[in-house]
Structure formats: C-alpha cells, structure tokens
Amino acid sequence: MKRQKITEGSIVEISINNEYYVYAQILNKGLGYAFFDFRSKEKLKNLEILTGCSVLFIVSIYAHVITQGEWLKIGKLPIRKDLETLPFKFIQDRHNSKYLRLYNPNTGEISKASKMDCVNLERAAVWDSNHVEDRIRDYYLGVPNVWLENQKLM
Image (tube, rainbow, N blue to C red):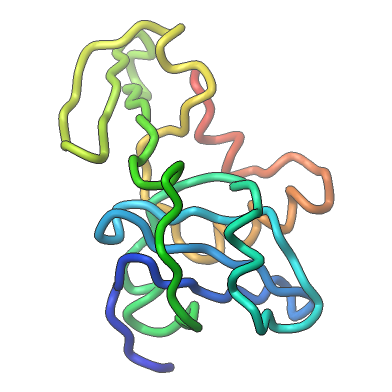
C-alpha cells in the first residue's frame, strides 16, 4: 500500500466491489470527506466533472484509510464554496436518548440540542473504509444500509 498524506482538496478514488469507481474530496484538514454522487466503470480521467456533482454525504473517516493508501489520492481540485463549511453533526447518548448535542466540526463547539435540531443531520462518528464502501454500494442498489441505520437518531 502506498503511504500518503491527508491533503485538503485532494480527490480520492474508491473501488466498489471491483465493479465501479466513486470519488471523494478531502475537506477542512481532513475533518470531513465529501462523497460525490458519481460512479463510473472506468477510472475518471477528468476530475473537473466532480465540480458539478451533488454530494451523497459528508463524513469523517479514519486517517489510516488515506495514510496507508486504502483509497488512493488521484489529484486535487479547489474545494467548492458549498463544501467549505462542514455540516453540523449530532451527538446522542446511547444510554440516555434525551441527551442530545450539536457538534460543529468547523470549530469543535458542542451545544445543547433538541430532537428537532438533530433531524436530517449525520451522527458525529468516524467511519472506516469498509463501512463507507458498504454505504455507497447500498445507496446505488437502493437498499437500506446497516451502518447508516445504526447511526440514526433514536
């Protein structure tokens, strides 16, 4: 595996079941990764196509996924305006579902939240490569993803 640095703006290529490729961009010093709604049976030659793609989701991943070369960096693009600020996440205690907090990954601030504040937000979590790959595969198959279901607001 190739050793790499986490470099803001870098595009990583991810093979899903050796069937197709998807792409993500490293955001905000590696605190978030934007996964684009784009897949191709062939490796992407022109990264510019990603600038017009919608984003499936933005999550944090373990550093080793990049640093140990599980996903290879294949180039770099300027970060789009809509991706410069990472979305808020929610924190919920598994033992006390009424304990809710909003987490701002841009500043590290955590504040009290209501259930309504947390609707449609991702749970604050760090994902491993296989979980992200499963999530992407399931999205394109149109089936529920077990890892995402486990992350839902209780």
